[in-house]
Length: 345
Image 1 (cartoon, rainbow, N blue to C red):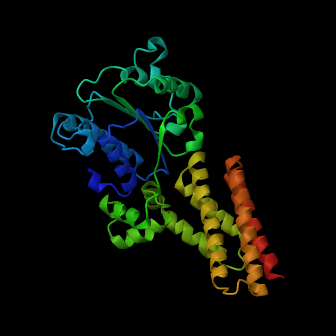
Image 2 (image 1 turned 180 degrees about the vertical axis):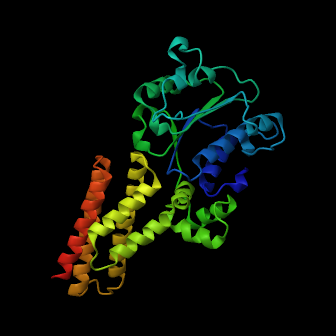
Image 3 (image 1 turned 120 degrees about the horizontal axis):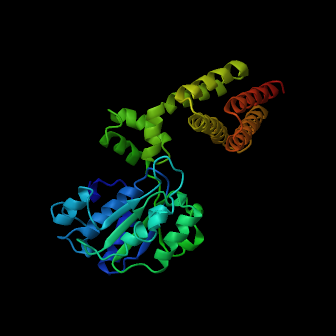
């Protein structure tokens, strides 16, 4: 992949070009933005550009032909390090930075990046999922950030800035990445082969929230069908909440048998309930030129607001680990009751 293949983030690219041309690159950066928008790809392109033998830093480009480029693209560059959450773990352990207990300080990222470069002009490390640093691993990294080795760059990649220790944030130059446009996501869906046609990409991209990762999940689990089903249910003036709850639970269970997967699927269902309410409230507002609707329109708007608020309560219950079955039953029972109450006024 080359810079020309990167979707979006032109402003960030230009900013790094200016910094490199002035020899003002920082020792540490914090890349922050939603998942699936290209932060890691940007970090890898930046790394290869700063490794390339045939291009000076001021070019911020790479040839793909020199020894450093070949080593980097082959995944065997001695001056490049990348760490993240190990498989089966939920946090980045301290061992990733300072080695195992029996060999502390003799291995790990903090040790490796302190050594002199072997092939390139500098050493570069990318710390993925930096928002999942625990207190111990964060403090271990902090020591390196406070006294960065010469000719080294650390790039922390995170989704949530708020979950990064303030002491770490204060020692990194923040680089914010925005979500991709709908057209950019649609183009990537076709380019990466996730969909066969531009029409299918245009159908999925508006629901991606500017994230290729979200778009990929939409396709993997066919969330679009679930969304359409929920919209159809909620558009009815009345529905059998017992039957609907059973159907919803069956769909959630079909996504996966384990509890985390089912809770994740339930989260998407709640999101679609909220989207339905927001879309319908926006429609009512847009169809009232004077800003004052009829009594019926006001009742419909109030109904949708109550439904939206109830879905937020369900979201809280999900985060509090209420059983999925009870959560779904309670939600659709209440949504059905809200609709009946409005119909009876």
